[in-house]
Image (cartoon, rainbow, N blue to C red; front, side):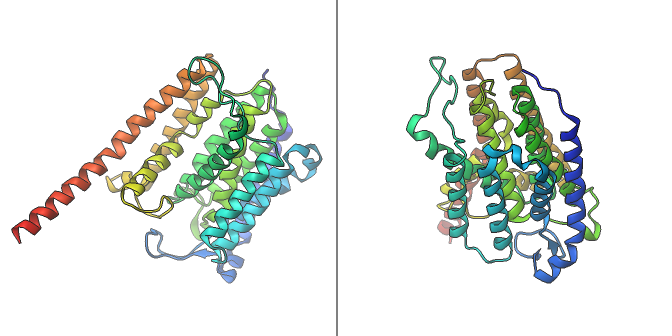
Length: 363
């Protein structure tokens, strides 16, 4: 069933974009007073302090644009509670008031709220082995909690290049809106479109070719956690909670670049005997920039690649390609990505050790 786009949804999305843009400009000076700024230094590439108010603007704009419609969203109450909790936690974290352990605990609590209060968790993974659909039964909730934490932190990990995390999220939200209209979930379509509008308003001040100037802003942990949570929520709800749902493996293609990079980086960190959450400069955008690509070219390549992957996954769904084919072709693509971006790292490590041994022997 394809539902046509109500113009009111589009109007609310535009309103959210305008509100987000206005809030970013209004919060510029207060952010400096509150020290809600990202100070240069270490692995950071910017030269002057930048306001970290994008997450506040995105969250507030979404809630204001949907305020008149809250009575329609009874089933989404846990979603909005989670958004407010994560946005608040993110702001406190940007101010240096929340430890990494406490932040992770809050993320777990929000994920539990999503699965229990929102009854939004993985039940049917699809027919992944060309036999019967896989039903998660009792392990669906812990798997969902783990997946939610992974997506939230994946968005945060990609927030290291102007416009990257926000642009990737915007592409996903646009596809979510289309999916929601196709399966007839109008409430999901409205929420996603409004969040997309708010994200667009933020990107006007975050993209390298946007309206930055003195109003340049970062989304901060508040923005990355809210967007990550929303992406996790709708990746699950659109595949589980509708009679006419999206096949679960399609969402792997939608989150393609995020999933492939986070998996590769996690394996790389473990190979170095480091924590998977330890910061470094080994994400795909860092690698591309070290190879000579500009920040704008890197941004365009990655956002374009993710849009292409999302389009491929969508096309396979439209063409009624079997779940197992959608799933295994994505895993094959992951294997290629892993070979390209992890195996050269291992080879480099071996050569480095050989060189060190040779130097020691000659000494």
